[in-house]
Length: 345
Image 1 (spheres, rainbow, N blue to C red):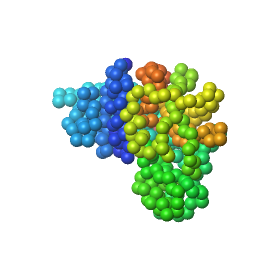
Image 2 (cartoon, helix red, strand yellow):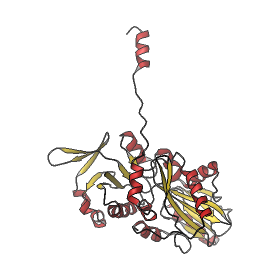
Image 3 (cartoon, rainbow, N blue to C red):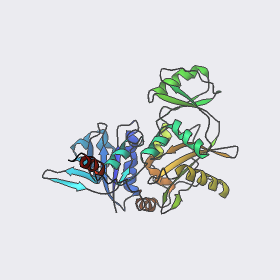
């Protein structure tokens, strides 16, 4: 089965996307894979599978690879003599900006290219942590209360110490800090505002249990991964998550009773709804005093959360078999014809 992996992008998570793509080369070895690299200038390159190594990108060697252009239904690969059209479904593996903010979804929809990944509306609600909370509350899923601060605005915080500071629109724990005392607040905000114009402030709960669950809907049914309890010190910082993105071995299942697993799955299904159809997402939950709280939605999880699935290739095959159709509107110019006829033209 043919599948194109689209990765890179103009994002603070650009390098993580490269790590994810090289990991999936191994995990999807039974697919006929094409690798499409989007550099920070939004130039597209066809990358030979043998060159899918970190050094290809860090050294700039990728610029010697064939250029690609987007066309209806696929991509055009430039050759020395002529060109080749690549038509196959795409796995959107661009983390952060471009990939998760709806930009790539809009591009692929515009050119009628089938793809695995969040659609534009799903991207809006999952990319920005503020909107994720609005969505969860509207659906009846619990979330932690938060405050929102804006760059250049007031830095007054009413949330009691300790609390956690997060950029509103960034993943991989980049720019995240735990603030325990007032004298550490300005520095934490300065760090977060380096990456975003707004930040959220949430209570930091010592020793809170966190659980990760991935899944998707296909053929009318939800398909879930195992539940993982990630190992962390205080929170999953960038270094820990960066290493996790390169994981390919299946992790151990969390020690949870069946009713707790069902509760996590029910909350996941509520969030997924119909909005995330066509995407494999991961939801990170907190378990506080027996209650489940959504922490965040990962619409394009690192390495597609392959390590949470016993048969990741099967999961991707199932998802490819039930991608949402694009909206096709037939334009017949009836309105203009009617006006023209009325004017006798």
